[in-house]
Length: 134
Image 1 (cartoon, helix red, strand yellow):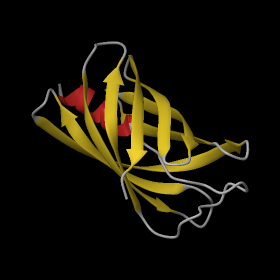
Image 2 (tube, rainbow, N blue to C red):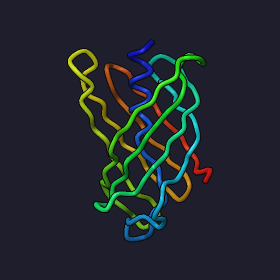
Image 3 (spheres, rainbow, N blue to C red):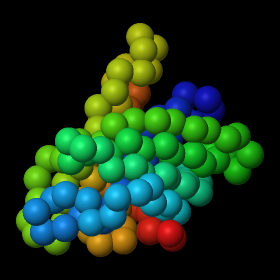
């Protein structure tokens, strides 16, 4: 269970609104809420993220949520820009979780006010969906 919680926390590595040029249109932290869903196991739960824009066009993200309805988790990751089509910004995250869990990968599409993405780690794959709340 703890392994799954760590994987899911990482999966929520990114959301923010961007301008056409891909730079943040807001200069302060924003809060997003939504859910994570494991396609491998069927587990799911609530998730919250606080994103803070970085000067390099990426974001410092702190994700928190619950696994199995009662097990809390928190995770920090840097989201890096991977492309922009004018309305949507593609973000990626990669982090080594250690010898047992391996590596975490995330690819997300950030549209104004929402994030939709997928993650893969330790044999698990899944999705995340968040909306900006403030």
